[in-house]
Image (cartoon, rainbow, N blue to C red):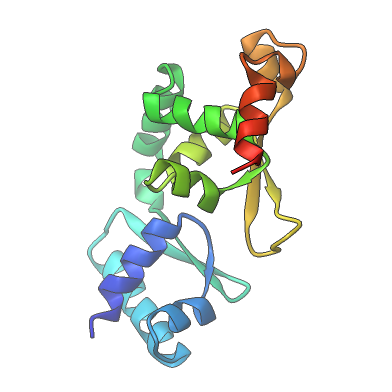
Length: 173
């Protein structure tokens, strides 16, 4: 089995650090095989000067952009934040506004697509906050911020259109 390819896909999709143990469980193999494949990925990235690399810390690993690509990545991120929010970002922001605090899994269940990068973009813009999930210490919940309210000129979240009706409807489902 090509664990290297599968690990790359899993780490890309996760968008956050993942334990080697969890990767081994998902791929139904041992941690030794996972560590070996991760080492192969590291070697491949370095040898071929690829745009990605792996960062290891505290038993976790994360796929990140290579230091070689720092400047172009900064330009891309800057251009993303100078542009208006995409329809997908607005939809995600609306879900968080009316249903927050809410987990990424719940947002993705409603939208039907991966929201990692949208959530990161909204958090970097200061429109949402990412907090430890009190119900599950391994995940996060998202909620709107004061900056979101200021940006829309609202005094409180309840000033959103139909907030109480939509909030009550969301909580009864």
